[in-house]
Image (cartoon, rainbow, N blue to C red; front, top):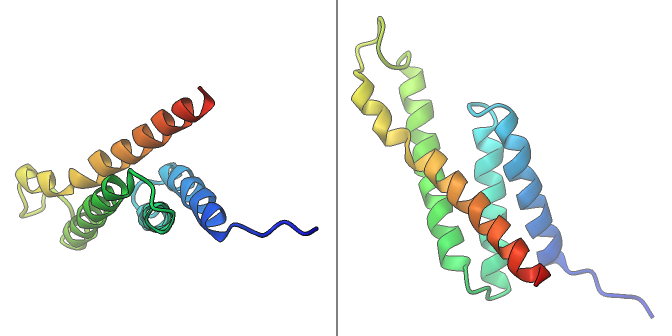
Length: 115
């Protein structure tokens, strides 16, 4: 008898892989990280996981941080010859905070599964 393919599990694994691969280049890889975070949030929402709200919140945080990172990058960055002060870089902080939260939650979930 054929076993049914669990698409939500495939989406989840693709999201986790994208979250890890995107770290190789934090600027250009940020788009991959956004996609990976969105895939993980989608799969946990579909499966009615108890952490889906946290994954959704971190996806929103990552999107906001990546948006401001590209926006400020279009102005030439911060400090030096740029007209933007370093304080504007605080708007990028949701990106690394969201990524660290997602990775931490994935690690904690993995350890709890093994027990």
